[in-house]
Image 1 (cartoon, rainbow, N blue to C red):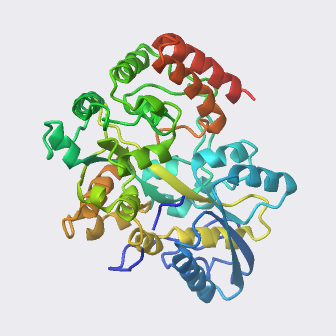
Image 2 (cartoon, rainbow, N blue to C red):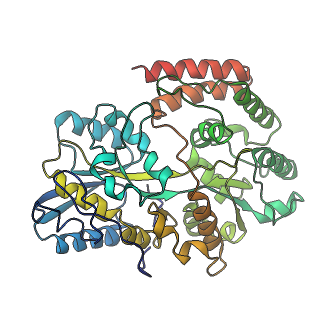
Image 3 (tube, one colour):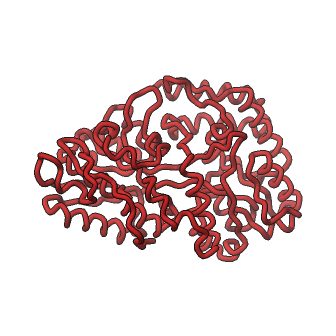
Length: 437
């Protein structure tokens, strides 16, 4: 997660109960992280804490939180390990096989899914029941597996996509620079106008299929999985109609010709280069655009997340998970809850444009006001407004293997080699085959 960053503490926010009982959180209202866990005495032992690519950008912040926790819990030593995103799933799978998973691990729901399928993580619905109500419901739910009881992670930080757009290119296309698109039809219409104005020098949108296709179906009310969480169901007439619109857009030149197999990083590069006019993505990418393309950043406006008729919005969630095999499970649970408590998440959100998963922290004026009027402040407010009702729309079963199987068919549809409905039927069959194993 290379793009999350800053720090500064403000007003006190409500306290997250974070003490532990034998193997669970006891619900104390202080923020010691468990120093007075009921009936079990002081916490002790070594806790290994593994994160995904947070060094060196967030070293000062993470080490600061660890230091505070250790000071409040002198019997506990936290050993921080940071690993790169690339190869993380393979490493964790190998660690699980060898019985060497860390005591607290930072994962998103999709990364965690293959391990959770083996029942490796502590059920936080039980172990952290006293703090569950403090978190944004959709964030807590992100770590549930459809068809199975329990939730296996404490939500950490969140993002909720906004729509960034290049106001200079909007002007060239004759579009209103104060009115970014808010619906999928508006997005494709504005994309078409931009591409027509660009005449090959710039385009409207990048498809970024790997990042958006399945999410966009969910936003439009398309059911992705059956109730048991075992069969994919997104080959509906509504999904076929939407895919037909994407096919038409591709044929009409709304997307760059070479973009079908490109990922989100290429979409980011295209926006920074001024090659596309619209960039729906997490607000944390504003920081990257400022660093890499200051002139594009100056021309950037921001609007709400693109949604369907029901206004459903998506969130991305990072969480903290504790393996059942942890030798210091009580201390690990206490540390995970401390790292993800209201105060620490608020501080993290002021380093980088992410949002806290604790509901009370989101009420801080930092997230509700326009602040200095900058595009960052606007994006932060919009994103925070969305998060209260947002959900993690992509099921944990949609892992990299399923994604690749699905997008191979969708790319064929956009190339005109499969009809939209046939492509979706084949995508569902391919996804079912992967999920069944």
